[in-house]
Length: 208
Image 1 (cartoon, rainbow, N blue to C red):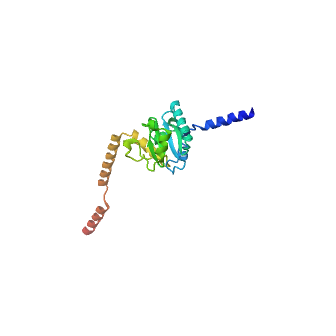
Image 2: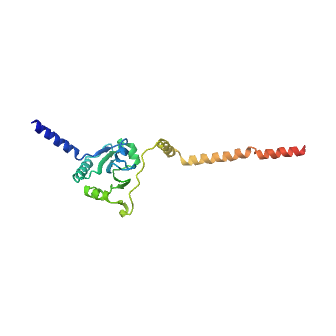
Image 3: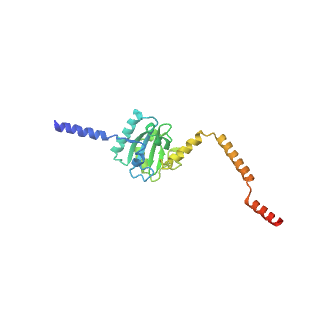
């Protein structure tokens, strides 16, 4: 009985490793994928879900995809998902307004959102093995898309500036800058210039 139980536990553990979809979030995305820092962890097929959880249909698809890749011993392609409402940095970074399927391959990314029929293990395995991949957009005439960088130390400053210019009325700002420029011109005209003062002193000395 103990052996049978142990066998069942081992079988259950083996089954649980199948369809092991990686849960990516703001804190571990770059560390796990290394999509902009060398890609030594392999290629990544990532489903970006716009809500706070991925729907069961796509979770099932991702698990099936991972199982099929594992069956082909394609451990180089990782399958993952991002719940964007819980991860605002990734949502902003990849401009997720609706669900997106992105494949990250050697420092480039490829948008499979409109090509769900091609998100099969065979297609992805062949696609990632090409020496020079081409995107599925524009009939394959372009190379992969640039991967946007993650937050940096100066991101809070640029974010604050973006928010400022979103709320400022540009017409009001333009009017204010124009008035300030006119004020500078007037003040500059009223302030005596040094060379004028020097000329006045020289004239006075001549008169004396």
